Image 1 (spheres, rainbow, N blue to C red):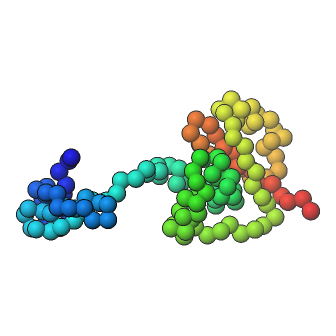
Image 2: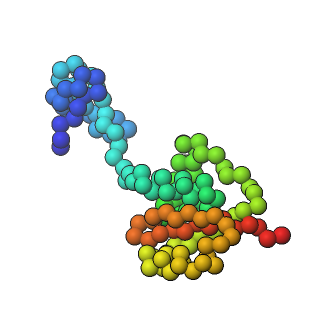
Image 3: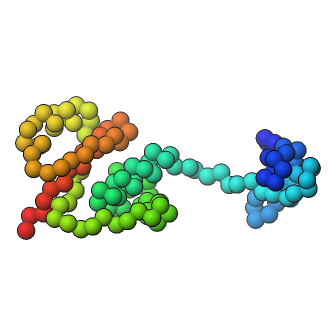
Length: 139
């Protein structure tokens, strides 16, 4: 087990000192301070947090983000709440998205009809690309 660093005096001279709430407790030999170490969980890369929040801002639903990124929709909801991301306003445009390979994206961009009409953004999604296009609602 690696040496634990005391949060009070930053000494690495600590010994085990029992278990509290299923977590190992340590006592610093220098200052006598008792502490526990943080739980180490399955951290999600900040890349995916940022991508999920970008997709949410673009109007993609939580469940769609879950399907696209493979991250729980509950996690995405928690990030939205944690970072206080505002709900996008409803307007006359709605986003549609496509997941494309590099070749498919190049072919899409070469067709002039695909480029006309509404705004679009291309974002990297692992080894693929996501093309988000805003189209006007048809009444």
